[in-house]
Image (cartoon, rainbow, N blue to C red; front, top):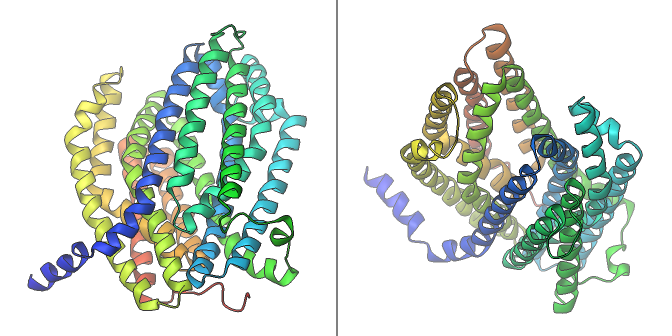
Length: 460
């Protein structure tokens, strides 16, 4: 008992650790919260037009979901290198990695744009065969595709700024852009302030305006401040084939990891969708509540990736181990606390939804399941997204997450739903085994010490 007390005393008494963590984590938490809140407002605004309109926008955004998964993986992969190069104070290679990130993001965004422009109706048809939904979704998609290029640039710069410890900068600019989005949504969807009422097309145009504003302000501020990321075209393109190949050995597993996770989530949704409307409603409610509670966790995981990466780059392996231990223990404590809070207030949250007794009962049971196992989910995110990736162990992180999702979570969910015909809360509980196995494998990897990898070695 005394050993445990001393262990936690050491964790909570380290003021320098918490100062570094909060400088990165708090802005990321706020950015995620603002994004969730404004997206909810956007959904409400489009929802005022009718069920068909909200279905059309939601389905069109599934195309963006795939694009978004690629961007997150690419930006996070580049962030691993930038964090470690920042620890070394190697500014030249930071600019080269930034060049790889921007070049890759622009090329892929152009591919998505071209495919979307030439096949908008076919893309919507993949998810829905209602002619009216296809027509509205195609109109929305044609316009919103313009924003993809600007979104790609914003992602790369935002993750790069976080990796050098500047998370506040992108958070403030995103807040401005999202407010711009909400304002133009109101004006263009409903025809306010003398503008025409464009409906779904107005929502798309508002998104384009917001993303353009966000990218221009962000890039302008980077070059205006003349910081490390204010690279010239020559510095961004000062690349060799060998440098790009070495970079992608780490970046590619992160991209595949996020794409694999995204596809897995779509499979889960498809399974629940086949279980009926009430099952879908139950899962949507629980996922919405769960995501709000995970805002804190994603901020912590960003801080873990940056701090671990910086210390490895600086050659301070023991400090990296200490950071990993502190983040792991802290994630358990915070996970238990958030789980208890969710269990207590979940009945109140469900009271805001106009749902049947059956959906309310199933939702309550799932939220209790989430509450009990929340610390495991928090620990998984910190270990995979924060510590292992930040430590340069991206390939192993991908293998752990890919294996547990596709060989444990997805099969158990399919068996529970279609073979044993369990109710939705039992099927959801079966998927939790994925998180438990992922936690065991990640902790084993952490204890091995093999996750500490200086991916920037011999890349000068």
